Image 1 (cartoon, helix red, strand yellow):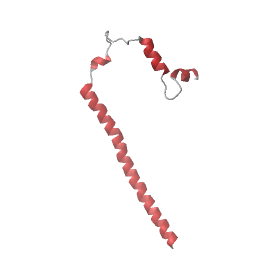
Image 2 (cartoon, one colour):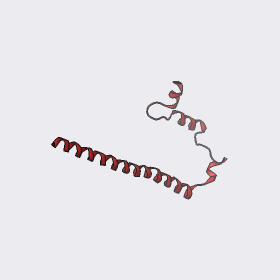
Image 3 (cartoon, rainbow, N blue to C red):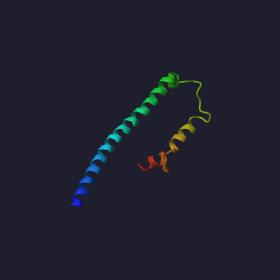
Image 4 (cartoon, rainbow, N blue to C red):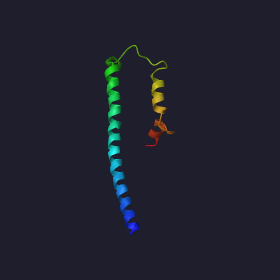
Length: 89
């Protein structure tokens, strides 16, 4: 009789715990989308300059475009670079 009562208690505790976790997860998920979205929107509204997206004759990388492209091609996530990933395909 005691074991049946404990099983019922554990079942109800698990059931309520899952419901609570589900609600908490939903709230956290909303915050994970709302906060970054509001940050992006706020930064774009306060500091967006359309001139940054046009062709400008005054912009020149100090070491040339080859240095920029080398940095992009050799930077990778982890220890494998983009070049080695391209070679393996």
